Length: 513
Image (cartoon, rainbow, N blue to C red; front, top):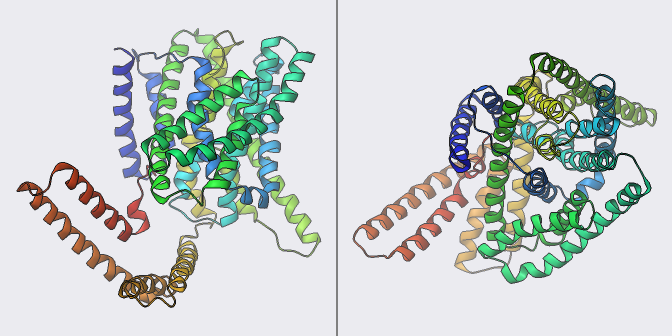
């Protein structure tokens, strides 16, 4: 089969597996990891090559920008200490620990061993988020787990770039040191400058398909430009996204937010699917060409690396938790997080897309590349399957499932939002204003008191019944040629938006969790 045919077959297999994951309530990244392993074990699996220089731009740039856009600077400032500990402490300690074992056990050169450490160091939030979206854990833990991924990725990719530069140069000479000292601040400045430029360009394409296309073009263009200038593409993307989100998120139109969110969610999801399947192909090619004794040694080294990665994650999470608890108690303040929350954070150390993409990005002449790639895939597979599949029962076992409290907190927030809408209509005497007040009052009362939730359910039931009648009438008009194609699509879109505005939150989203 050629490239396109092979890709179609693999995507069809992925779709089937994802449906299984939905039926079994399994996090989809865990199922993708199993799919990658299946691809690696199936004889005759086609091999699709991927240019190492393309891998990071293709897989990392969109995922990094998507994560950075969803993490406001204000939250980063509030939780700067745990994020710093996980990003610098956790990632760096993991990278160094794995590098030491790679150097002493696998015989990798020090720089190459550090590259391996950087590859397997950053946890991926996708698997944890797939579980956490259906659960409700303490809000601080949830925020840190979702936010750490961005900074973990940035720290790991910086180490990866630095170690790869040293490995390629053969030593840490003055030229390499100068490059690294300029790359970090230069990448940040480039990202901020690019955000300023894009903010002014966006107004010309707002509300168009070209505007959504521009979001992808500017992401890849910024990455490539940073690479060409010898700057940190990772930090450029992070600075660009966080600056742009802070300055334009509130002012961007609702239609652009809805459309771009749907497109970006789908693209990042497809990239995850492709990454796992392509990695399975690479592993199949590696295993097929590796002698049995060498394969056994690589398997032992992979197992040791997995144990180190998990152990360091627990040590950092629990150690930081106990230190902060002691610090707060000594000042007469309550602990910011419990030991059970720290244990949960430690178990949310699954590896994913970044680990796979950086393994793809290794040059073909990298020392013991086969061992490094095989180890990276083993870490991803083990953590996603073992930790990912057991995360939900672990949350329940630790007593951290707060779904009832979470629904209550969300209801309070919805009530405040509805009340804000009511307050804005004060003084309005038009008939339409009274209709809006009735709608907001139902939402506000249903959110503030559980017994009034029946009013909202009645409103939804009647509204959906009326909307269904509208859609049936539109279909009748179409069948007798009373509306043309453009009119039909326009009216159907209006009815669809009306239905979406009535549906509850869990019926509006399209997710794989």
